[in-house]
Length: 79
Image (cartoon, rainbow, N blue to C red; front, side, top):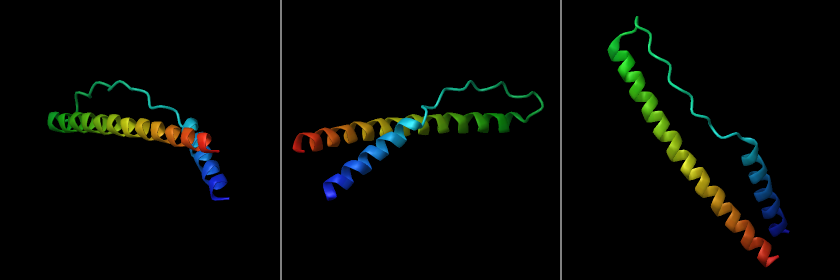
């Protein structure tokens, strides 16, 4: 019974992962000339930092998907 529940949970998780679209790169718009240069530089640095975090998280997600596929493959071989 537990094996069946585990397989269903894994399938459900994979289906949910497929529903989420991959993030698309959006170009950074030019800063407005009325803004303070320090604020603009701080925001640009924050954008760079956030993009690095997104890239790191995407790598982790891809790794988890790979591991999930391996688990599913193992369970299918056992079943």
